[in-house]
Length: 251
Length: 242
Ligand SMILES: [Zn+2]
Ligand SMILES: [Zn+2]
Image 1: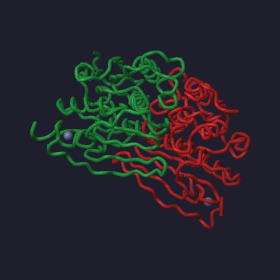
Image 2 (image 1 turned 30 degrees about the vertical axis):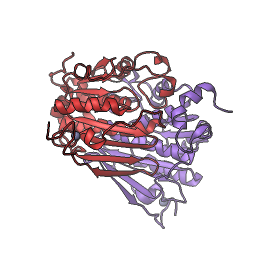
Image 3 (image 1 turned 135 degrees about the vertical axis):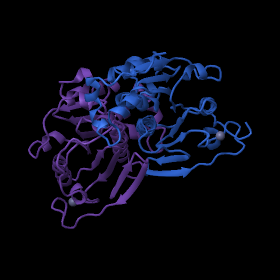
Image 4 (image 1 turned 120 degrees about the horizontal axis):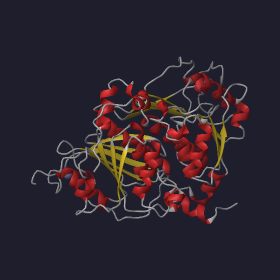
């Protein structure tokens, strides 16, 4: 497992990140915090693509990116980490190639296994934050349980067609994913355009950067609902389920 | 020409969207967009329009990528420093989708060049970083009755609106002046969010799906993750569209 660097910023990094470091409250200290951060990106698909690319250009220290699948032609309308030449490779390995080209300062740890109850602990490892870029609720609930048990914050996002939703989960402060979306709808091939995952993925990346750097406030206990056809954004307050089998008091 | 088998597979998931289908995909393929600027906004705009299968992208930038651009301009990498940005964009976009015809334009956008640069585009995407050039583009869009998606960013905030004069106010009605050019703070995800929204507004307009941000300015505060729609009105005395 690679260790995030604890060294001060190099001259190159000071230039590369200059424009974000002049943001009020950011500066070199915050940039160093980002450099020391480790994040787990679950899924290198439509959401995982913008999430990992924008975390990389922002200078996040270590990105652990996990996907057991291989890019297919029908993925390429949205999964901008991959291209025609990567078809047949593993997605996490393909992601590493793209991310390291875009910012060689960032360490990428590709993980090629499926997230299961057995593998989740080994795959997530020691990270500051989990980013849910998955496409199914069965795996999301495995990740959610792990995040709750280990008190690791998790940014959930989901997309469909031109719509999306997003929330920042940090139990016990907030409801967990099970409180918000109990159960799993059957997996289906659903409509999706790249830009939908692009918007939600960029918002996820920003929520992550804000959390890791301590800037601004996160969508804690709030579900952001977005309808791209009308460009409506809404904040829906979320409540804990008192008897939630994952985060409830009885446990 | 109908879509070939590869295109049918590549765009399968988006063609499932209501009112998209093969007809919509063919419309996208026969469309040309003009992207003014291959920087922070131009990067996600061009990348997501390319992935969606737009026919032709005319991307215009006379600058070269610098190291301090790379925290946000995901079209370019360190190895592209010293190349022209529009040419660097073409390389990146060709890898993402070889079906798209990318026309790199390496000339500065001025009153004299704007007509030739925009060419036969169906829609203009304002991915610029200064209002002087934006007003040149706006004047041209109003004269030619071309739709233009305007976006601007600063720090962790941004704004976007869909301009289509005479139906909507023009950019001059909303922002009559030019702010002095200066180095402002910006993180990559800020143009990421706003740029992808711009790409989606263009796709919706080409396909006739949903409602565009006409007469409405969407403002976004990323620190609080708050989005707000502001009604905007025409200036009856506007020197551009009045
Ligand atoms: Zn719960
Ligand atoms: Zn006007």
